[in-house]
Amino acid sequence: MVKVILQIYPVVPAADEAERTAKRPIGRNVDAYHETIRGCDDLVRACDDLGLWGVATIEHHFHSEGYELGPNPGILNTHWAAITNNIRVGALGYVMSTQNPIRVAEETAIVDHLTDGRYFVGFARGYQDRWTNIIGQHLGTRATHSTGDADDVINRDIFEEQVDMVIDAWTQDSIDHNSNLWQIPFPYDEGVDWWMAPATERLGAPGEIGDDGRVHRVSVVPAPYTQPHPLVFMASSGSPRTLEYCGSKGFIPTYFTNIEKGAEYDELYRAAARKSGFDFEPGQNQNTVRWLQIADTHEEALESAAMYDSEIQKNFYNLLHHARGSEEALPINTPVTSFVDVLDASDQHAIGTVGEVTDQLVRQWTEMPAEYLTIILHYAQQPLDSSIKTLERFMSEVKPAIDAIAPDR
Image (cartoon, rainbow, N blue to C red):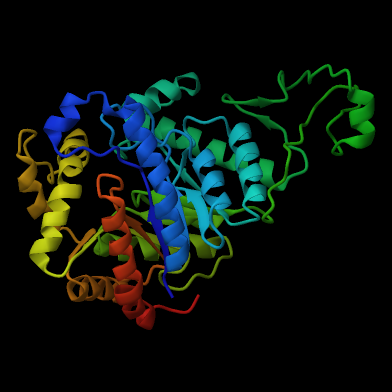
């Protein structure tokens, strides 16, 4: 059976670009954000009632335009767990090229306890220059567009080092670390003069206090509730190094790609995983992302895409294509209405009737039976009742057909 995750950004809604302009910066509109974030409660409860495997949010900053307001996923995850019974909560995910890995290890371990283990953690590299470069400046981070240039290499090196540090902090009673990025303790060679050292030597983690009576390792507390640690998802552009890294750790790669690339990445990922002792079947331990619109007719589904997805496609995703020099980029002044055809033609978007969406996803899962499916709805640009109805139809009418061909994992 496929494990369904809803990804929530959330989006502060506006009727059109004109209203978004009139309310600028709408991301700081107190009433609009408050209504959006409180509405997430009802959406998450509905996901719990409908039997979704998980609900996730993101880490993104500075979205004055109102498209992706998610500066602190841990707070939302903890709150959502408190108002639900069974659904898992998580982040897709913490941008580790900008974060303090010790703080992430501590925060996520606490969230894991507060959720009684109904928690998963996602890590991402950071592709949005505006905030990645600013928040990651003290680490020397620059946003990555997966081009393989110097900034991309630096971002990846920082990302992998800091993710490894989180894993160490989760799984080891005490840690040390010495690199150009971090010294633990600081200074590494001298250690820390610690007035509690006599007690720490007797009561703390073995090895924290060296023979010289100074701190030479630290114990990151608490340990996670889930042992050895929560499930880890990782956003992936499909580069061989990313897939090798995910495979070597047993992380769950999350593909924001079409199914042909997903099938190619599946083979690369499983080959890398085998080298580290993980024997995954096709699609196992992998996550595919799809944007979704379901209606009684194809035309009605396209109308929903026009109302809820096209403005974001124009002002966010299309501009990302421009930044990456992609052939998919349309002229910047292309009308919002023109982007519906782009969405309809993309197999990353499942738009249509129940039958059409079912046929599309069954075909894709026949080619690459991913264990997880992450659905993106642009709530609250897409209203609450429409979002819930779409999920209801997917879970009751589309998912059973996918489950019929998906391995039982």
